[in-house]
Length: 138
Image (cartoon, rainbow, N blue to C red; front, side, top):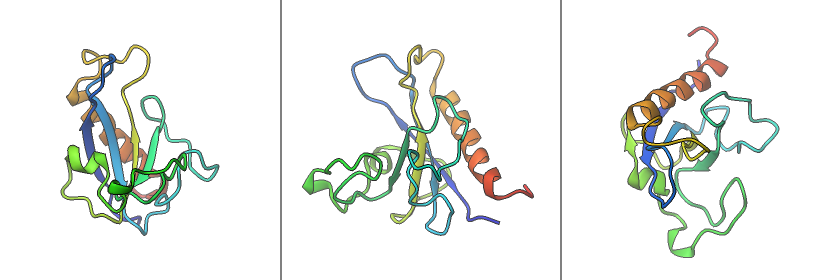
């Protein structure tokens, strides 16, 4: 059995139309997906709204894991935006965990068709998909 995962949601705040926010599943260091970015060929095809669009550590390093962009120096070593501003749904998420997420910022995504409750449901679906990849008996 693979280590327990935890859910997190975070409200999107920008100037263009989108759904309520984003959903994430946090995996612990011993999880097979910990540290693997979604652009890596080893990352499995996980079906979720718009596909997986985010894979990053819970604490910022000096560069983003996926694109390699530099992190603003004052943020290095601090908890990521998602953890500082989001709502953990399954209890506190430790700093050494890894986030896997999706967003509701695609064409035709709105607050009407992607309200908070639907983001929560899709996050639970993502968690189930991730858990089922490695827990074949669940």
